[in-house]
Image (cartoon, rainbow, N blue to C red; front, top):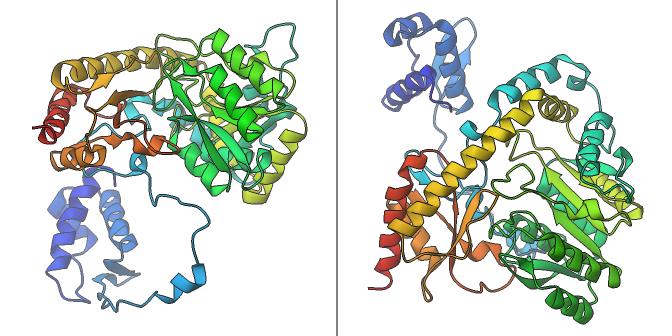
Length: 470
């Protein structure tokens, strides 16, 4: 719940309810307005929250009453073990970056920018406009709203050299966020049990999507410059894989940014083996010092399947992404998307289109670049001065994270637990490896609230490390 004035009323009434008997009537709305000095609208908002939590029940024309608490019977679900059998994929319940920390902690673990880094005014206005239009009640095409598909296609076409044919709106499929898109891409391009080359380390969500699709992950070592083309060649030759998942621009978690030459070399390997390159352009809007150069803009043969999401840069509530693919691959991806979710909410698509087509969008991105640079540099300084036990292989030229190596022999999960006990949340690097971790790492984000707290937070991290190396 947001920290508005209704939160104060909810907190006070929870205490009142805890000491009241079941069936007791709450004070009247008029009494609560006077007691809390709040408006009737605020009081009603608080009461609706308590109803939603199951603490009270409202009887129209009578009042609001404390609900009886049902006894916990502890039902036996053991029968499900036999019915479910073994899971078909080894998936974590909730990945570390998705876990919600308690209030008043320094959050350096999450992957979504805070509200102060988002175009909040544009988003609110766009949602209001979209709700007033036809998108609120009509069904969009399975492939996505035509105008939004055209915007994604134009973004990629603008980066395409004149001698190559650019993507068109007909090559675009809109998906409800990059996670769903990745699952469809992997299912469409790689048969269950067949190999998929994947950088190591790489985005944990891609690892989970691939495992859920039932494909065999083949890790390809990657550093701050990207994967070694010779190693990519070897992996294709030894496995017979037909797809390679990569993040050429500001990779999550390493921040790696491929050079033009590295991108061409890897694409040449992919061409020789008759394979697909799945390019996850997740950080397209998060350049700081470097520039985004999509590999898909240098391919017109359908080798590159390009994925771009607006979820992180527009709003986590506007889960909209797009897949640019050509030929039969696009049709298979579209078929998978239609089978899974039929279509993406037209309301969210229209809202996303309203945001990115507003002149204020470019202004926001220019301002965001400066904000990310400032926060990145603050966190880098805090790591170097407050946590000398951590090693940074490189300062990323874009993205949202630092990839920090722990001393050999450090238990990264224990560091996470010890930091959390001291009010600092960080993410262990193990989740970003498709196989055994090459070394212990932490991923630290510079997009959470209170950047002024970075030095104190890194003091906590350093103490947690030293506990294991005394």
